[in-house]
Length: 179
Ligand code: 5GP
Ligand code: MG
Image (cartoon, rainbow, N blue to C red; front, top):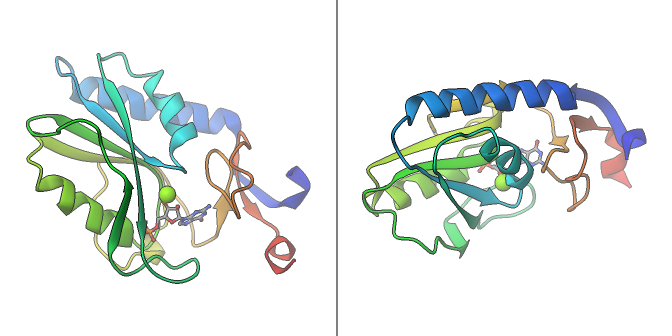
């Protein structure tokens, strides 16, 4: 898989340091609380697994799977909840965990729909942000890295369902797409 990489953006060690920093911020902000950590499948599963092991609070973990209807690689249209939360989040402190924020189409629909369920608080933690690509405004509470407009894979992020298991984040070589 390494031969398919144009560039490694963040090494395994850099990501580790970044995840520790984010967990430290969460441990500080939620001291005395029992937040519900919600991972957005599939991309967030690696990030979430590392993040929760650095969180020292008595958290609970759940997953959601959502997609925006639309064509190709551009997310658009309306929100489709493929897998919903098992727990009622009314009165809970919820931390949404997402791999990457791109156009913002997905989260700008998901966040208001979760707000309607009456959580005590709802915050967003994302590993990667591509601010140049933003179409819908989304505010991030815990951010790993801002990155330029490039398609990245690894550390949970896929191309055609592959590369999720790479321990680093990298940019794919263009010829991989044109195959
Ligand atoms: P948004 O709704 O913000 O446009 O899309 C966010 C979703 O698009 C992410 O959760 C992720 O699944 C996918 N995505 C956006 N940019 C990238 C990228 O650079 N690499 C990968 N693998 N997925 C991306
Ligand atoms: Mg995703």
